[in-house]
Image (tube, rainbow, N blue to C red; front, side, top):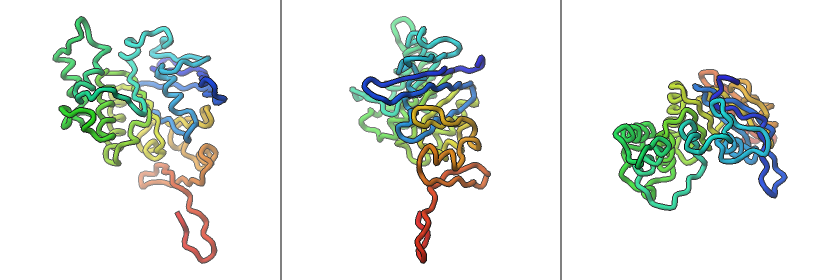
Length: 270
């Protein structure tokens, strides 16, 4: 698709020594979209995102970034366009928060690699967007898991990417910061950034994402808006669970566990 910033084309990936296969799977992502990648454990969500980010190389198919084959681009070139945040970011040294975010400027540094006033401005703005300014002077070991995740996101934003690929970024965040995080993604998309986010939260996806892609057993089961994807029969086929789809006050689909049928004389059980 000519206007797609990211285009995964019939990608297939196999882990060594495993019978499990991703794909062939295709999807495209345009500026202004927030795509949720959904599915049960083991369905291929993270593998698909890592393939799209160039962390994994597909055995067949290809990934195009802004019209170019990613396999022909060097990592610094990719990093000027694409920001990737994995589920867990390992760190060997107890860096200060501001140092971590400054690392995100690497694709843009010139000469001896010293930060300019413009770099400092981007770093501060990235911390502000992720509500991390208040602990910019702390080290990583002095942060909670949720606070560290916000710092790592700030580092990705400091790259000033046009495309964000995020793998379960709100898993360690409380409900307030989950909502704040996805509102930030919507604002970034409104500014022209393309976003793909892996999440287990079907209702967050319904509220905040413009398009949903449901994975099942390594393949794309269904793709579309919340109305098209969050259907009871579709979700039960993917998750194998008793789920029910209802509506919130705004008419958006919300997904809940189906109540168990009570035995005679018993109250319904959730």
